[in-house]
Amino acid sequence: MTHVTACIDGSASAPAVCDYAAWASQRLEAPLTFLHVLDQRQYPVSADLSGNIGLGSREHLLNELASLDEQRGRLALEQGRIMLAAAKERAIAEGVNAPEAKQRHGDLLESLRELEGEIRLLVIGRQGESSDGAEAHVGSQLESVIRIMHRPVLVTPTGFKQPESAMLAFDGGATTRKGVEMLAASPLLKGLPIHLVMVGVETGESWAQLNAACSTLAATGRKVHTAIRAGEVESTLHAYQTEHGIDLLVMGAYGHSRIRQFLVGSTTTHMLRTTTTPLLLLR
Image (cartoon, rainbow, N blue to C red):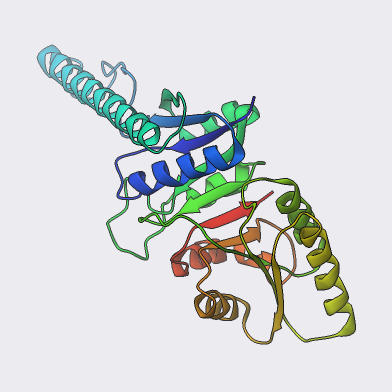
């Protein structure tokens, strides 16, 4: 059975990641797994330093360096275990049954590639452990994670608010049409009103695409609102979201349309930086 998998670290986003993961796990009726990866760049495995210039004849320095690295790694490993235990306790308090914990030493991207077959939804914080704390800062690995994953990714802010409404940025393309089908089939947003918003010029074709998507979602009993707004994509979507108090933004992760281009290259970081709500990226 595939899991909701939540990436846990020592960042300010970790509590919200726990809470959104617990919420998603219960909505999807899927088991929850917390994942902590000990970054090998910060805590490398034991290395042979004897070939380093100037150190070969100083055995005591080699031993001391090895001892310090080992101690740092051991402490970081224990810290990760404590974080995972706290995350499990938090999820259990929210009603999740028997959450699991996994800890790995290595690279986050490689770990996610290896585990992808077990993942139904990945939950990850917008700000990672290496963040400088700036509210607009986006974790350095987040774009890479989004690129490699072939599963939906829920990117969380630093605070949790249970979603009560959602907005799908719709452009009529194949990716967002598939996104509509995914939302219609998934229990994740069941019972929540969904806003389908297209940014562009109103035409008969655009309304036909929007109404077809609306019918797909409405057929599952969902309350659906539709709108076409003119303007710049990012600011228009955010303005609509603010106007209607929408808690969750849903987008397709890749593509070539005006909307989906926000998640290609540097614009990914910009879109994530400017949203204050969780962002669900569909693949």
